[in-house]
Length: 73
Image (cartoon, rainbow, N blue to C red; front, side, top):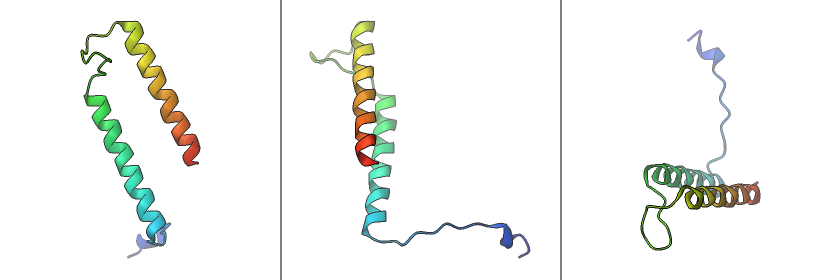
């Protein structure tokens, strides 16, 4: 029990807002994991994009995610 005094707990009230934020956070993590495992598929459905096309897609996805995170803040 002497080590229990060193534990810091920053608890939150378990209301609808915190539950919603946790669900949204978990969904974003799952999406990020799935996106990292899958390849980027082009408009035609093939995944044999040139380096320029896939680079552009990655940059657009980064911008979209950053804009989404800015809106969340």
